[in-house]
Image (cartoon, rainbow, N blue to C red; front, side, top):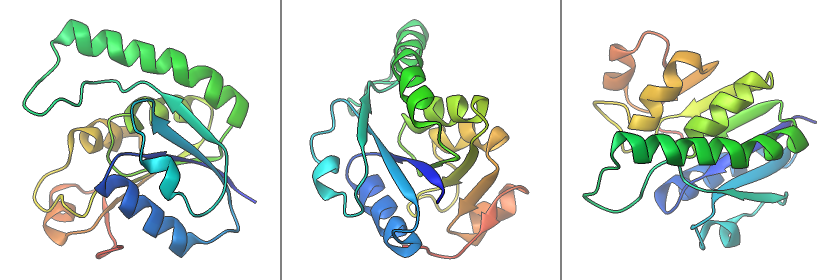
Length: 163
């Protein structure tokens, strides 16, 4: 049984990830990582597993961009919160699809020897998300859902619309 840390984001990210997990089925040991501020995603989980929470590495206020020092501070805070979680879970794989929390989770997961699987959101047709651009260099499997996006990134695998 593979131990998988699944990173959920709010709204569409969670919906797409949970649909993907439905396709993967219950033969894996799922652990879920959700932003501390996210009050909806946990209630939508269909395949049981422990839920962990950590602060976002960047603000989620529409039209607001964190300054570099603020973004660095939030990222360090997220890494500090995630370190004991990853020590406890010891995931064999980290599965994510877009939320900012995916970046520090994937980075620490890689340090712990986990396989990093990143599925770029179906809404990303022409260019990667910020999280995708940051995870792409060290992802073991980087899946995109549009051929135009795969054509721009040699390491990406076009899998068609997964969801």
